[in-house]
Amino acid sequence: METQYRGAVLGGLICQLFFGIVLVAIYRALYAGKPQTMPLSHVTTYVWLQQAFFRMLVATDPELLDKIRTGAIAYDLCRPLHLYGYYYARILAQKLTGSVLRALPMLVFAALLPEGWGLCLPASVPALLLALLGLILGLFCVSALENITMAFTMRTLDPRGMQGMLNLLMMTLAGNILPLTLFPDSWQRVITLLPYAQLLDTPIRLYTGEYAVSQAPEALLIQICWTALLVFIGCTFWRTNQRKLIIQGG
Amino acid sequence: MSYISVDHLCKTFTVRKKREKGSLMREKETIHALKDVSFEIEKGELVGYIGPNGAGKSTTVKILSGILVPENGKVSVGGMTPWTDRKAHVRRIGVVFGQRSQLWWDVPLLDSYSLLRDIYRVSEADYQKRLNELTEALQLGNLLRTPLRLLSLGQRMRAELCGSLLHSPELLFLDEPTIGLDAVSKLALRDFLLWENQEKGTTILLTTHDMEDIAALCPRVMVIGHGEKLYDGGLQEMLSKYDTKRTVQVEEHRNIDHVIADMYRDLGI
Image (cartoon, rainbow over all chains, first blue to last red; front, top):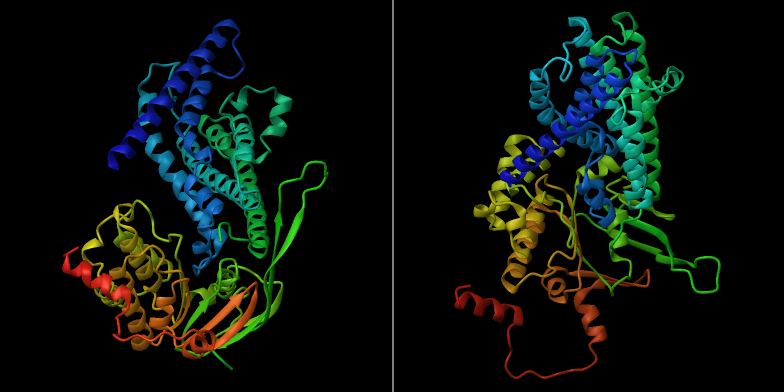
């Protein structure tokens, strides 16, 4: 079992390193042809931070989905727990362990790469601290988002269709495919307000100084508002689900 | 008022079927899982709940354990309505669904149990005392460090039962707990349930298709069929009522389960 866990971590690590290097190479080629307004080192930093915390974004909890599908969730309903909170904690824990385990070695690797390839230093010490705070809020936000997907799954029973669509939205609008900082300015004004931008884009911008320290309260406030709203929607959803519930498989 | 009182309980399910050729809409069928079921159970009783497949047994158990919400009817368990006071209600009950698992597949039993201890907020002293008691009664002592996935079906069922009883529930629902068990495990399980009922005063509602379980454990049975309660009363009365054929036995044989169990023991299995 332990070998399997180590294998999974190592495999994921190598995969993310590969994607990181390929993406950085693409942006270097782009900049060689037509330099953009944003400095290249900020783009490479953006790419590395996105890759390092990739696990935080994607939804992967086959066990919970199986429970819903087969009806084993009946047992969870006989626990003296607030159900929304129970699943929220579960999602949060999985995202946290999954990303921290990968992020540390990846960030070390990216920091060792030569100038223009790797991770640049944070804009300042306060910027780093604010980015960490933003990252924690992002984690709360993404867990709330995924818990809504779970609540949906209790209705549709099979998450694949919706999860595929949501993952695509997530990858695009969270800045994993193309850094949000490279989108046209008019687009950015809208995209940065969406919940997906609150997950990783906001903390990365705080890190690189794209959002100045003076702008930080506003950015963090948007994150908090989205988290609160998503938690509220998820809670309501779970509550109505509980009333309409049927247990699959007798 | 009785400990459990169920009053005119109704529950329906809608089943959507595959569309027939030539029709535009899918056919919907409403299944009346429970039609006006009422009964009362006193504290400390051990009641068997039987009926053919699809009669509504599991639905009753799920409503009583606060999982499902019925359309109609009143239920009170120890003064609480299961589905409205779910959190407070489930703290005092234990449930075993025979064909599902509540323990974590990849981790040793002990780790699953300590997680359950935290979920139910059982104090460490109570937990240790109860765990010792249960592992002894269910013969789980040398399995505690084994992951669930390496246990046999019978061992797993005993482990599940232990998990459901760790927080010392005052009411236990068993939904086919002896499914797939060999004679030895079945007898051990029955002894244990009797002990739990008599020593701890735990109220037990047992759902099963195994009539020997019922005969060995339950002085009172309730029979349900097509969502309606058909019989409620003593087991002996029920047997003499329906047992119209008489056979005369010259030599009294023991119960076949006991014979098989002795054979297994004899062979040292």
